[in-house]
Length: 279
Image 1 (cartoon, rainbow, N blue to C red):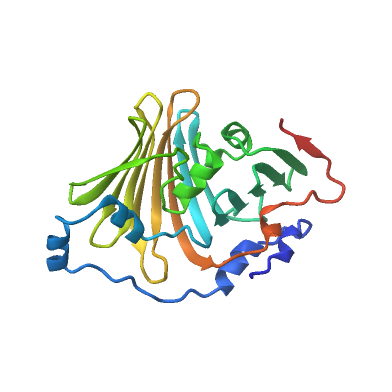
Image 2 (cartoon, one colour):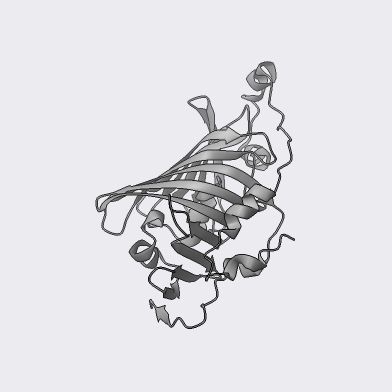
């Protein structure tokens, strides 16, 4: 259990998440790769169930990292550096790191509850963890995705499939193994996995109409630790205003923990600050 009891020290505006990243060391364990000969023979015997089972899963623990997040949308271009804690299915902690000065934004999402503290304005917001609430205050997370889907993508994996009786269809495409997830005749998701490394390299999620809702690409895998993690995530999604949003996340100082205190994902209202309710 990693203790994060110091995270509510708003008066000093400390950077506990960033400090924790610098203190925690990661273990070195490079995943085995399939040889070219094995890879050549395996192409003809791959099954989608096996590919999903063997795929690297960087979403099993708690990701601690520093991230440079760039958002490109019709309303403008935003760039933010932040310390992150991410845990599936829907727990997030963010501390925005300025070039100079104290942390200017604290954010937590836990059990579908969004909390944001802006120290310079002495403003504390509480509301449902919806895309609409996020875009108004934390524009660097403007994706239009649900919290669960967004955190899955940020962790380098595909979103949870909620439908039952899902049929898997697998085949080779572009030297990658593609898996289509289909339920009741409707395509839910397509994912592309590199069979030589077992890395997930692309995810595409579809609307009920069959058109793409969003696409995520994963690159620059760090294999020095276990599990391997993509250091670059590119997400292209369609916002509620029907305009595309492009988010590029570049990770550094990546660490994994087996667990953290649940308190880390639940900001507390500082003394003397009246919360503002978004809903």
